[in-house]
Length: 462
Image (cartoon, rainbow, N blue to C red; front, side, top):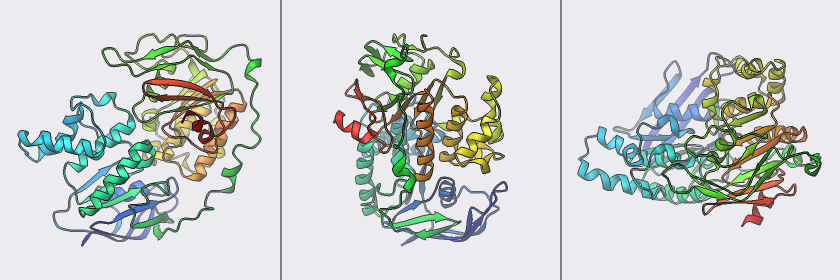
């Protein structure tokens, strides 16, 4: 049964040099699971908005839907969809609008949350959830409506490995019930057991995609070569040091306890752990912006972490890049902090050129894709040439080409003496690291990376 069809869709952003869609066709039938790949900025998220029916004209072409069609969507940044304060209230919101009796809501809400692996109290404040947990929450908020079509924007990047496995099983069950699924995804092999159709969005059209084992650019294979690591023993002092400490919010259970930390200039740390273990919280603690955690006894650049004390010496990239973008153009965004700290403004266009982003200079950062926003936010911080760079999942939303560019930038900053903490809920191969800080079972353990890749070093953790 055909649920939705797009015919000869053409669309052009006013500030773009080329059309985003050019006579694009797409058909979705009940039980389909269609995967759409494409480079960062190719229009994948915009295509989901078109399928959803929230794209405003002018765009040419036709969109046909089956009668009484119900669609659900989970966007790359689930925070933009959140409406309520607690877990249960968020999932129940749609049921309330449909007039479902309160006596029937509890069972439906609990069932939807169980399907996505959220076995926590319905009264849990959403603000305490990690980004991956919020992604699961938004899936549950869609499933409670029993949609005919479920649209997922980059779920692999937001979920840990257990979450991906659970979602794969769930997608297979939804397919069997007749639900159609569309997944936009950079990771080519994620959810492959469910996929019925695979497409590449390129040059404004959808092309059948055939996986190529040699697809990764040759440059990716040479990322680790030639890294010049600074000799930490020659440094006067670590830039971050702490004796064993505990992290937890006031009145809440312990998040995790940590062994002693030492981070030296030029070192790269892989901060790993599943969704919700406390990685983002630790980065915010190091930056001095995490409220309600008390004094952890951590010293960063010989000071107790506190908002505003580090200037351009410490920079933090948030998981939500939109939180760090507020200027009207990319070049203005890049130069804002340079002006603030009296640093050379020419660093901004140089960094854009280095990352292959010069074409975005005059565009609004708020109209960019999630991956492009991540790139711009990171580039803005790298221009400051900080002593410490804290990166919260910096590769989310990036294709292999931009992954390579960002990885090389990280290595260059490391060679220049910048200490880097890179948070990720799974190991990232091809990037050499010096330490692993791994959180599991409410404990953070520290391991030597010895310049291995994250996968190799992570295997030591088990």
